Length: 327
Image (tube, rainbow, N blue to C red; front, side, top):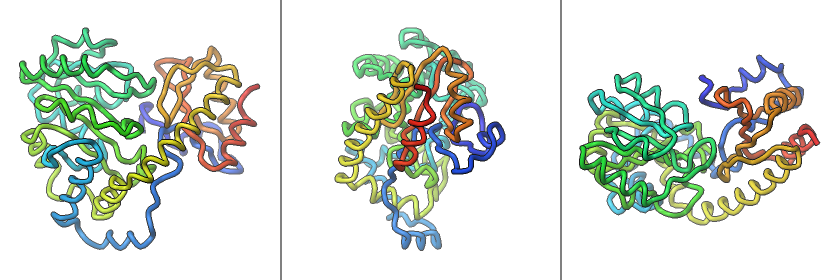
């Protein structure tokens, strides 16, 4: 586990000791109220997924993301696998990563031999062959305008390049994937585990033109995910009532978290409905103070004034956060 990620409670315990009441883990942007998986679904672990399972999963993903052709959907064991594979489908070239963002993108392209430039704006990326960005961005929730993306995608396509858009937190918005209107030369990545609260299922998707989708699918092999992941994913992606109710619940929870962060004297830099990015001159001290109380937030070595807070789940976790935050 690198500094790019939260969620490593072994590291938290090594630093602060094991809390008597267990950890309140706010270091990840995972929905604390997951889509309900019934216990009898575990029987799916006894068999390999059939073609029909994967076809139904692709169809459900295409419908959920506003894609008219399921052949554009690539099924993967989490978007991290796609992040690792995409750089290997191209010869070494110039790649721009819009930063700061999820920390695995630049290393994956660099490891595959590409020359990486981490840039702060889209105009700085225009002379590259591949541009990678996250929308909404992690950790600040920034959203690049669709018009800018459309223009950039067209320019990259003329050069036979790619625009890679990480939409890991885009399920919070019911509108279609930005890739629905950006076909050739555009690849969008969709994480399942964050919004649906099931990261351990290891399920994610790429949305690409049919040719690129086929190449990615061939790279991942014939059984990219388990039968359990395929069936749970198809069911959850088709559950529009749960999605609508959950989006409302997350908005309310985010507003409640805002009040607590501001009340503790921190400013809110940005975020999504699954996390908030806070800023304070004493962020390091607050991080340590919360850790001593068994609450694990997300810090950023590249910016010691930032702290990211995921949503508490059970009411007692909200109470513990309220009691631990400085007043």
